[in-house]
Length: 301
Image 1 (cartoon, rainbow, N blue to C red):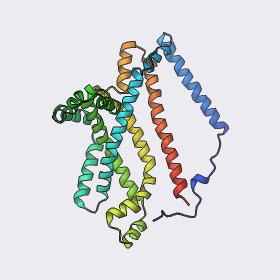
Image 2: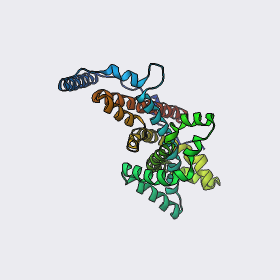
Image 3: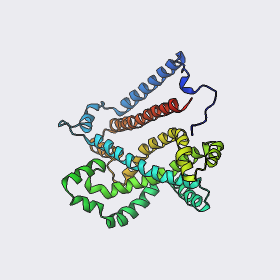
Image 4: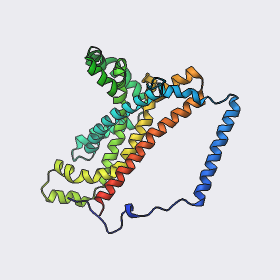
């Protein structure tokens, strides 16, 4: 069943207005303000900038990644695994909240409300001291990887990171996925609710049972509405990953703190860390925008 279309031209065919003089004036004022702040910080510090020192912590002389770049890779791994867990839990909870079953609605609502109304730092500590100390040793994943063949260790190093931190990494990824999944659930619920009642009635009239109705008619239309908020939630996952630095996961924020304690280059280190986070989040934003435009051109008549 094709999505409903209206007679109004879609936004993909509209021509966006170009920049005006006011835009250039505001950009100039912003650049001047940033330059003034940088000058004041330099004047109050009384020491010269040492940006060149950070080069070796991004890329070593032998071509291997430095501390900061290692932190970026760990942040990417953590975000990917957390996003997969969040999507799985979020889709399940979101569909449960739209289910005609009262039991499923209560279970989905309980999960969403518990996770959304709990500080993420508290959730990290709860999961870390319970999962990492009680459940993870019983599973024995870290011990199994230590005695695994070399190719298994190499694969685990790419997908998870350091073997001696597998239990803590898995706990951190699950905790972030659990927390972000509550917000994904609301996105899914809103996307499903945004599909017009006529689509549901048409599917029932054609004899579709509810699972097939959701899979073939409702979800393809709902996904288009969910892409922008889902992209924003993935970006939030990248930023929220800094929380797990408190349990010694060597992601970008943790490496920044370690480097600052070693070099005392506070401004240089945290400016570099902020730029690396911006590169990660802005790349995701651009990719989501491109995907949204492609879907709009494909499905809008």
